[in-house]
Structure formats: C-alpha cells, structure tokens
Image (cartoon, rainbow, N blue to C red; front, side, top):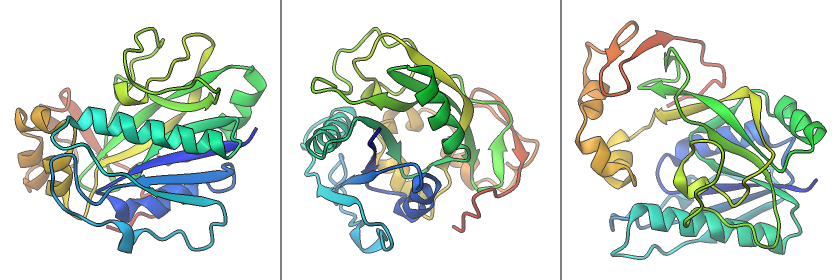
Length: 248
C-alpha cells in the first residue's frame, strides 16, 4: 500500500501540522491543496502558517477557486485535484482529510483495513466545540471516509448516489461495495479555531450556519460543560482531555 493523505486547506491552518502528526508514520505522501481566496472571494493566505518541516514527502498545490461558484463545487474540485496528484505519484490508496481532523488510532484502523480486504472504509466521529477539551458527548450521526483504494477512475463528489454511508458529498467516492466501518473515531475540531468567524463566513455550509444559533453559542460565556446546544442536534457538551495537546 502506498497511502496519500490529501488535505483541503484554507482556514484553520493552525491545526494542520497537528493533524499531519497524527498520520505521519502511516502515510507515505501528504498532498496539500490550498487556496488564498475563499470560495466567497475573501482573501486569506495560509502559506505563511503551513509548516511541513521534517516531512520529506509533501506536495503543495495551489488551487484557484471558481468565482462565482458554489463552495461545494470548489471543494469537490480540490479533492479531485488531490486524487489526480496521488495517482500521478503512484499511490494505491488515499484518504481525504481536513485540517481539523485528528486520528488517535490510525495504525489500528489501517491494519484493520488491510486485513479486511475492503476497497474503502469510514469512521465515526466526535465533534469539539470552542476548545480542544469541550466535546459533544455522543458521536455525530454521519461518518467520515477513511482509507479507499485509488483506481484510475476514482473520483469524489459529482452524482455518486450509491455510497453505503452518509458522508460529506464532496468526499463520497465511486466505491459502492465492500466499505468497512472502522472501530475507531476521528476527532473533529470543527469549532476550534483562532478565528471562528473566518470559517463561518467562508464555509460551504455558510447558509446553514446562518440559520442557527451556533456562532452565538460559541461566543456565549453561558455555553460550556453540561450545556445542551440546541442547533447541534441538541447534543450535550462534556469536558474531555486535550488528547492531542492542541494549543489555540
């Protein structure tokens, strides 16, 4: 197996190196597809904050988003550019990753995947809110794609409808059969940022965020351990260890 981790980068770049560190001994090639203009035409250059020192196998590729265009279509384009780069470098497998995604047991999940003979895999995930020690008590109701075989015709997104798990549509690949549910969790620091407003303004889910009270709850001092966050599926927040020693 030659495994590529393909990162989609704009905001939250302060979390990137920590995420890469959770994968570094199990991944053969890191591909970072980055942009300095958001899908909504806001400028932010992440490159001064991308630290890949000590990593030998890293590809940095700049993406220029289509504007006007949808956030989801630009994300899909970035993910497929990453796939083509992985193919051109002889990778046999890949995983799509965002900067705020951390794996505690990737070695265990990778070994399980290789032993299973599966063509693809997904993980459950926990989401964090405000700080690296404040987490929603129960896992999210959707899944994150993990390792998949990389074939000449592998693509992400588009009109793929038969993927057997509910995942981000831009990460849904054309693999309908033998997709393994791994017995590990991805830790999603989705609401942990130096500048959460940059994320909210430029997320492909911006329209959905604007309909909720999540940003208000993020800034509210009354929302913390034990709180029920109504617009996050009425999930309860609990305090947990900072298992990756994230410093924001």
